[in-house]
Image (cartoon, one colour):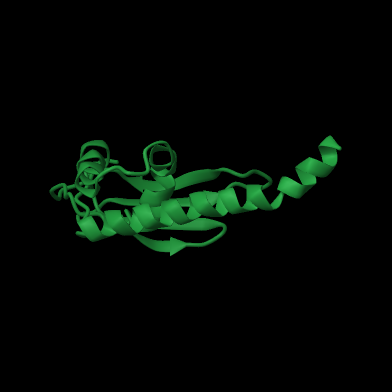
Length: 130
């Protein structure tokens, strides 16, 4: 969100540790609280000494397809370059046209899969009405 590239050192069920990829000193370490579903921050070094970047390896085509699924459901014929500009404006990251194309294809597959599941239930709906 702040356009710093982060690296997950530990990403386990009960603890996480995240540091800045450019090794500027930023670090956060958190543990899962006992009997709860929330994390408690144990240590935090919140200051970044590095510059911000528009490249982020955490923004993948899978993430983009999930984030923009409803938009693509409403307007499936949106242009790749238009979607690329929207992503840059909203998320402040640079993504390639092929990455946007893959995200659009994955979202389209998800939408078609939902339609297939609904169509398969059509006979059940008919029996319920009868």
